[in-house]
Length: 157
Ligand code: FES
Ligand code: FES
Image 1 (cartoon, rainbow, N blue to C red):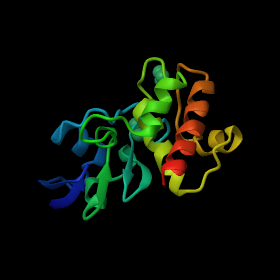
Image 2 (tube, helix red, strand yellow; image 1 turned 180 degrees about the horizontal axis):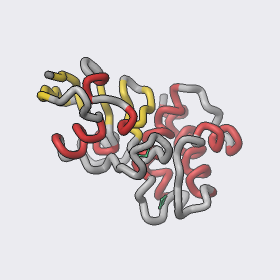
Image 3 (cartoon, rainbow, N blue to C red; image 1 turned 120 degrees about the vertical axis):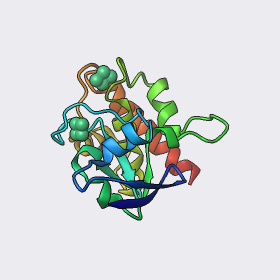
Image 4 (tube, helix red, strand yellow; image 1 turned 90 degrees about the horizontal axis):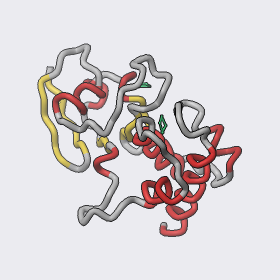
C-alpha cells in the first residue's frame, strides 16, 4: 500500500506493508535514526515524534495511519542554518541528558507541550512527561530543561 506524508517538511511517498510501523518507516526507510526505539511496547517514549503537531509514539502507530500527515522528527527541529530549537538548547543548558538515548523523545514530547498549554512549572511538566522514561538522569535536569524551553518558546511566540 502507498503512503504519502511530509517528514520534516519534505514530501515522502513510499510503498509500505499494512503492518509497518511509523518508527520503521522513519528509521529504516528514511534513515532518520534520531527517533529511537527503546521498547516497542509504547512504554518508554523514545520513539516520540510530532504528527500534525501532536506528540505520538511512533512504535505504536502504523505508517499508514500517518497518510496525509505532517511528521516532525528530532532531525527537523533545528533551523536550516543549524541553530538549535529553544527546547534543544534548554536540554543542553540544564544538563537534561546523560547517555542521550531518551533525549529525542523527551524533546519532541516537550515541544508538543507548548501547544497543550502545559504550565512551565515542575509538577505539571513531570505529569506531562509520564509517558517518557529516562534510565540515567533522575529527571531533575530534564524537568528544568522543559520548563526553560516552554518559557522561551512562549516568549518568542
Ligand atoms: Fe516506542 Fe518505547 S519505542 S514507546
Ligand atoms: Fe540516558 Fe535518558 S539520558 S536514558
